Length: 103
Image (tube, rainbow, N blue to C red):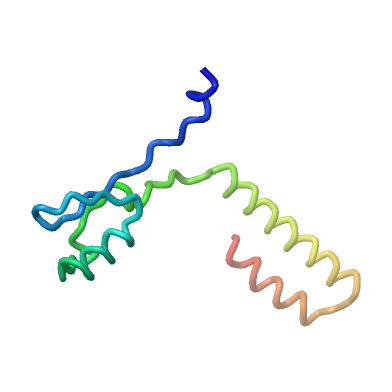
């Protein structure tokens, strides 16, 4: 059915934490504002455990790291070649100090 293909994504439902209140919210801040204004309820953010707001564990991107390292080394070497070609000894000395970090 066409209607099924355009159905909305399932949104998180955050129940009000005051006993007896049946309100449900999609956004965490909306729920916190409701709890503060209506129920005088303040929950420290470090104590609450919302599965919606948990930071996702990010896997390291090795391909990106390799590409950045290769690019930075290539640009350093190109800059060194250019400083030799232009006879800029001061810049070459600065570049050698950067190159020491790589070796």
